[in-house]
Amino acid sequence: MNSVFYIRINPVAFRLGSISISWYELMIALAVVTVLAWLVWQNRRARLMSRRTILIGALIAIPAGIVFSKLLHVADQPGLYVGHWGDIISAEGLTIWGAVLGATLGAWIYSRVSRGFQFASVMDLLAPGAILAQAVGRVGCTINGCCYGMPSNSPIAVIYTRTPYAPLGTPVLPVTVFEIIYNLCIFGVLLLLRGRFKKPGTLALVYFAFYAAWRFGSDFLRGGTAFFQNIHFLTGVPFLSQLHQAQVIALIILLITVPLIVYQNGWLRRAPAAET
Image (tube, rainbow, N blue to C red; front, side):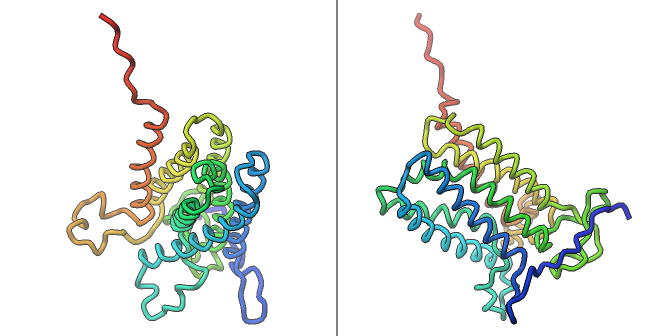
């Protein structure tokens, strides 16, 4: 067998009586701590808002991200919850797009009622921390085996031996490891781009665009359910019939963010006409 990497870690980190705490849950919690710590640290330098504003914003954005994250998974995999409605409130099945978009929506709503919360500037401040937190969260996905890639005989494939989510004993592409590396690279890129845009919010748009481009491409390396499988007039379209929910969201975000980035930077403005 060509694969040289085995993942033998038990997805359960520890137990407290009858309660099991998984590495996935720990890493998701650490990801939340990471992005909050980043915001507090960066705000000390930028002085955009008070600690009270950060606290209230977090108390709105984090629950919004969790709820939206779960709702997207339910919408994508409704069959998993039919007859098991209690699983909707479990920590499993949280989507990154749902977490990011839900938290962004929560922050935007808070900015409508709080003068001290400058949405665009705060999002720019958060962008590097958000992609760093996503890298942390993907460590949990890697151990959990929930976001495994397509079967492969590549020498960099991994084999899971203890998870209930990935196919045991079958070499699969470590897509989550690829994403961790990609996210860390984008973290560095976003740090280099800070302060280079005139319009507040542009760095956040760049973050969304970079991650959307990754998810659109990388999901072709993962198994999953086509998002339009039950929409009959779209299932006959070869390209659309293959797309996952994450890819559909990524495509929409790219169609929004890229034109906005171009517009905000004035890259399409015409040069002044020469006098005759």
